[in-house]
Image 1 (cartoon, one colour):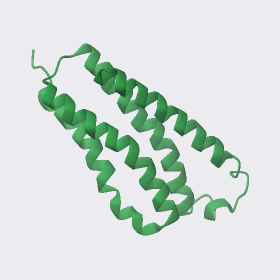
Image 2: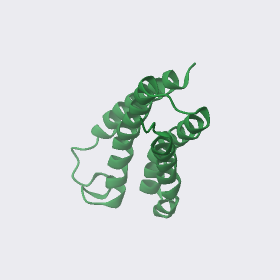
Image 3: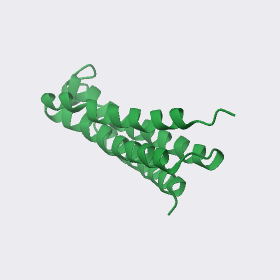
Image 4: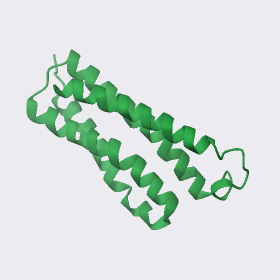
Length: 129
C-alpha cells in the first residue's frame, strides 16, 4: 500500500472512530451532570478526544492529497508519515486518558510533537519552484 493510500485509509478510520465515539457519548449528553457537567475537565477532554479523531483524520487526508500532488524526498515522507500516524493514535487516547485520570495531561507533548513532526518535514522539503 502506498503512503498516500495508507493515510487515506487512516483518515477514514479516524472519521469512523470519531463518529462512533460521538454516538457513544451522545447517549449521555442529555444528562446535565454527565461527566461532571458541561464545563468539567472530564467532559471537555471527552469532547476533545472525540473531535481530535476528526481533526487529525483530516490532517491525514491532507497529507495523502499533498503526496498525490507534490513530490518529496522519501526520507521526509517517512518522517511525516510516522508523525501523523502517531498523532492520530495518541491525541484521542491522551484526551480520553486525561478524562479518566488528570495526571495523563502531562503526556500531551507526545501527540503535539507528533503532529509537528508530520508538518515540519513537508514544509522543509516543499519544492521552491
